[in-house]
Length: 178
Image 1 (cartoon, rainbow, N blue to C red):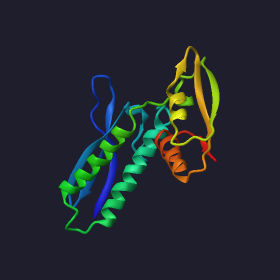
Image 2: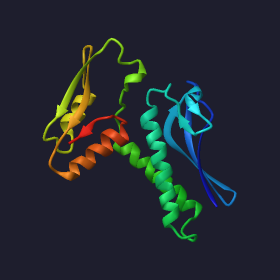
Image 3: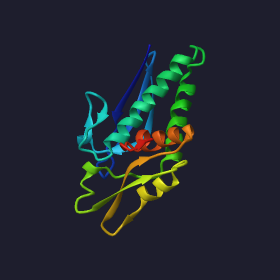
Image 4: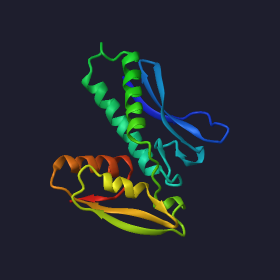
Protein backbone atom coordinates (compact mmCIF):
# COMPACT_ATOMS: atom_id res chain seq x y z
CA UNK A 1 0.00 0.00 0.00
CA UNK A 2 1.23 3.45 -0.94
CA UNK A 3 0.06 6.61 0.83
CA UNK A 4 0.54 10.14 -0.64
CA UNK A 5 0.46 13.04 1.79
CA UNK A 6 1.60 16.64 2.30
CA UNK A 7 2.90 18.40 5.41
CA UNK A 8 4.80 21.49 6.53
CA UNK A 9 8.43 21.14 7.53
CA UNK A 10 10.25 23.22 10.14
CA UNK A 11 10.01 26.99 9.61
CA UNK A 12 12.97 29.06 8.47
CA UNK A 13 14.17 32.26 10.18
CA UNK A 14 11.46 34.24 8.35
CA UNK A 15 8.79 31.89 9.74
CA UNK A 16 8.04 30.27 6.40
CA UNK A 17 7.72 26.49 6.25
CA UNK A 18 8.39 24.44 3.13
CA UNK A 19 5.56 22.20 1.97
CA UNK A 20 6.71 18.61 1.57
CA UNK A 21 5.21 15.72 -0.33
CA UNK A 22 5.68 12.43 1.49
CA UNK A 23 4.93 9.00 0.13
CA UNK A 24 4.85 6.05 2.48
CA UNK A 25 5.51 2.75 0.72
CA UNK A 26 5.70 -0.41 2.81
CA UNK A 27 6.69 1.61 5.87
CA UNK A 28 9.43 3.52 4.03
CA UNK A 29 9.02 7.31 3.73
CA UNK A 30 10.00 9.12 0.55
CA UNK A 31 9.84 12.88 0.99
CA UNK A 32 10.59 15.88 -1.14
CA UNK A 33 9.95 19.61 -0.92
CA UNK A 34 7.47 20.85 -3.55
CA UNK A 35 9.26 24.20 -3.80
CA UNK A 36 6.62 26.28 -2.00
CA UNK A 37 6.84 27.92 1.43
CA UNK A 38 4.04 29.36 3.54
CA UNK A 39 3.46 30.44 7.13
CA UNK A 40 2.18 27.64 9.34
CA UNK A 41 -0.95 29.67 10.21
CA UNK A 42 -1.93 29.42 6.52
CA UNK A 43 -1.82 25.60 6.41
CA UNK A 44 -4.90 23.45 7.00
CA UNK A 45 -3.36 20.29 8.42
CA UNK A 46 -6.67 18.45 8.34
CA UNK A 47 -7.25 18.70 4.57
CA UNK A 48 -3.54 19.19 3.69
CA UNK A 49 -4.14 22.38 1.70
CA UNK A 50 -3.33 26.08 1.99
CA UNK A 51 -5.93 28.28 3.65
CA UNK A 52 -7.43 31.29 1.80
CA UNK A 53 -5.54 33.58 4.21
CA UNK A 54 -2.45 32.97 1.99
CA UNK A 55 -2.87 35.09 -1.14
CA UNK A 56 -1.36 32.36 -3.36
CA UNK A 57 -3.64 29.66 -1.96
CA UNK A 58 -5.40 28.96 -5.27
CA UNK A 59 -2.26 28.31 -7.28
CA UNK A 60 -0.48 26.38 -4.50
CA UNK A 61 -3.53 24.19 -3.86
CA UNK A 62 -3.92 23.50 -7.57
CA UNK A 63 -0.25 22.56 -7.65
CA UNK A 64 -0.65 20.23 -4.64
CA UNK A 65 -3.65 18.52 -6.26
CA UNK A 66 -1.77 18.28 -9.57
CA UNK A 67 1.21 16.61 -7.85
CA UNK A 68 -1.04 14.18 -6.01
CA UNK A 69 -2.84 13.24 -9.23
CA UNK A 70 0.38 12.84 -11.24
CA UNK A 71 2.08 10.72 -8.56
CA UNK A 72 -1.04 8.55 -8.23
CA UNK A 73 -1.14 8.14 -12.02
CA UNK A 74 2.56 7.16 -12.00
CA UNK A 75 1.95 4.61 -9.23
CA UNK A 76 -1.13 3.16 -10.95
CA UNK A 77 0.64 2.78 -14.30
CA UNK A 78 3.80 1.21 -12.89
CA UNK A 79 4.42 -2.40 -12.00
CA UNK A 80 5.57 -3.27 -8.49
CA UNK A 81 9.11 -3.89 -9.75
CA UNK A 82 9.18 -0.38 -11.30
CA UNK A 83 8.05 1.29 -8.07
CA UNK A 84 11.42 1.59 -6.42
CA UNK A 85 12.07 4.36 -3.92
CA UNK A 86 14.60 5.86 -6.32
CA UNK A 87 12.13 5.96 -9.24
CA UNK A 88 9.37 7.48 -7.11
CA UNK A 89 11.77 10.14 -5.79
CA UNK A 90 12.95 10.82 -9.34
CA UNK A 91 9.34 11.28 -10.53
CA UNK A 92 8.61 13.74 -7.72
CA UNK A 93 11.78 15.70 -8.47
CA UNK A 94 10.99 15.87 -12.19
CA UNK A 95 7.47 17.23 -11.50
CA UNK A 96 8.83 19.84 -9.08
CA UNK A 97 11.61 20.82 -11.50
CA UNK A 98 9.12 21.12 -14.36
CA UNK A 99 7.06 23.54 -12.28
CA UNK A 100 10.13 25.64 -11.45
CA UNK A 101 11.03 25.93 -15.12
CA UNK A 102 7.52 26.79 -16.29
CA UNK A 103 6.59 29.37 -13.67
CA UNK A 104 9.13 31.95 -12.69
CA UNK A 105 6.35 34.53 -12.37
CA UNK A 106 4.52 35.33 -9.16
CA UNK A 107 0.92 36.31 -9.70
CA UNK A 108 -1.04 38.55 -7.35
CA UNK A 109 -4.62 37.64 -6.46
CA UNK A 110 -7.46 39.93 -5.53
CA UNK A 111 -7.70 38.68 -1.95
CA UNK A 112 -4.04 39.39 -1.19
CA UNK A 113 -4.49 42.99 -0.05
CA UNK A 114 -1.88 43.94 -2.64
CA UNK A 115 -4.52 45.38 -4.96
CA UNK A 116 -5.86 47.89 -2.44
CA UNK A 117 -5.81 51.40 -3.87
CA UNK A 118 -4.80 50.17 -7.32
CA UNK A 119 -6.88 50.64 -10.43
CA UNK A 120 -7.64 47.45 -12.34
CA UNK A 121 -7.73 47.70 -16.10
CA UNK A 122 -9.56 44.78 -17.69
CA UNK A 123 -8.22 43.46 -20.98
CA UNK A 124 -9.14 40.80 -23.53
CA UNK A 125 -6.75 38.98 -25.85
CA UNK A 126 -8.23 38.46 -29.32
CA UNK A 127 -6.41 36.10 -31.73
CA UNK A 128 -4.41 35.15 -28.64
CA UNK A 129 -2.12 32.46 -29.98
CA UNK A 130 0.02 31.07 -27.17
CA UNK A 131 -0.69 34.09 -24.95
CA UNK A 132 2.33 36.38 -25.16
CA UNK A 133 0.12 39.48 -25.15
CA UNK A 134 -1.74 38.24 -22.05
CA UNK A 135 1.50 37.31 -20.31
CA UNK A 136 2.92 40.79 -20.90
CA UNK A 137 -0.10 42.52 -19.43
CA UNK A 138 -0.24 40.23 -16.41
CA UNK A 139 3.39 41.01 -15.61
CA UNK A 140 2.97 44.75 -16.21
CA UNK A 141 2.28 47.25 -13.49
CA UNK A 142 2.35 50.96 -14.09
CA UNK A 143 1.99 53.53 -11.33
CA UNK A 144 -1.23 52.53 -9.55
CA UNK A 145 -2.61 50.36 -12.35
CA UNK A 146 -2.80 46.60 -12.69
CA UNK A 147 -4.18 44.60 -15.58
CA UNK A 148 -7.00 42.07 -15.12
CA UNK A 149 -7.23 39.26 -17.69
CA UNK A 150 -10.86 38.63 -18.61
CA UNK A 151 -11.03 36.53 -21.78
CA UNK A 152 -8.97 35.29 -24.73
CA UNK A 153 -9.87 33.65 -28.02
CA UNK A 154 -8.22 31.84 -30.88
CA UNK A 155 -9.33 29.31 -33.47
CA UNK A 156 -6.49 26.88 -32.66
CA UNK A 157 -7.38 24.23 -30.05
CA UNK A 158 -3.75 23.98 -28.91
CA UNK A 159 -3.86 27.65 -27.97
CA UNK A 160 -6.87 26.96 -25.80
CA UNK A 161 -5.03 24.15 -24.00
CA UNK A 162 -2.03 26.40 -23.45
CA UNK A 163 -4.20 29.16 -22.00
CA UNK A 164 -6.15 26.81 -19.74
CA UNK A 165 -2.95 25.21 -18.44
CA UNK A 166 -1.10 28.50 -17.88
CA UNK A 167 -3.74 30.94 -16.70
CA UNK A 168 -6.44 28.79 -15.14
CA UNK A 169 -4.53 25.79 -13.82
CA UNK A 170 -1.07 27.14 -13.09
CA UNK A 171 -1.88 30.72 -12.05
CA UNK A 172 -5.38 30.12 -10.69
CA UNK A 173 -7.05 32.87 -12.70
CA UNK A 174 -10.68 32.77 -13.80
CA UNK A 175 -9.95 33.88 -17.37
CA UNK A 176 -12.18 32.40 -20.04
CA UNK A 177 -11.15 31.15 -23.45
CA UNK A 178 -13.53 31.32 -26.43
